[in-house]
Length: 278
Image (tube, rainbow, N blue to C red; front, side, top):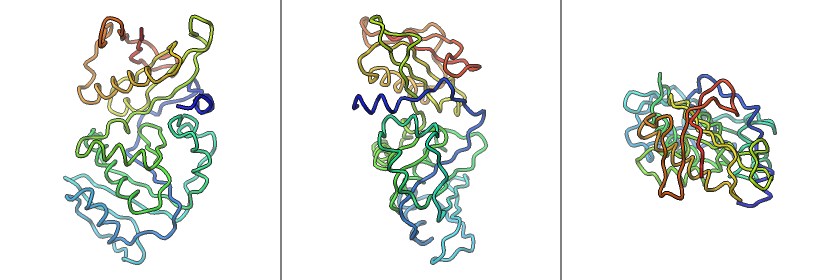
């Protein structure tokens, strides 16, 4: 990760607010305005999701409207909109996209967008995986720039999004479901007085799991902290909230992580898994 990009992409997450409920939505930003026909779009979806059952809504091949269908009884829908989705430079998912340092410039090229959703009362990991596959089908059918994943308050470049979906195959692409907000930590600095790193996940709460928070990580780069947080997030998503207050985990005695249930210092009013990384 380029040092200049890391510094410029760090977000001031002390001011972030996590919503109580998060709709199961994604938004695909696109350069094109010549959309695929309904038949072409349905074909792309079926290539990704053979069990998709299209529910015609009266739209023609030449003028695609909302595309509706079901997968195992779940209602899926997407709408191709011939206008850019409104975005401001201070959007949290733009400011915190440290993995996409050129996002500000690239999203300026968007001319249209798609809204993709899976309608579920209490969305499961399987529902999120279904949304990811629907979103991938939209990307592959259009000149897409990137994806806004609502549940994780995250923006993904299309090649990164598709890469993760393809890597996981039929398994849920867990890294898409939880983002990690980063910042420099002056309140808990390194021993030499320089700012340390801080991080907090966004997305676990969608599944009824506490978010993960780390403060005062003194590594030269945040990658070890990020890896530990991502690994724990994936473990919680697959195993449930089985980690206990006071647990210690680690690969060896030299690399131990103590986990405590604490009030968040970055998102007041919420309890988190606080990681103390040695």
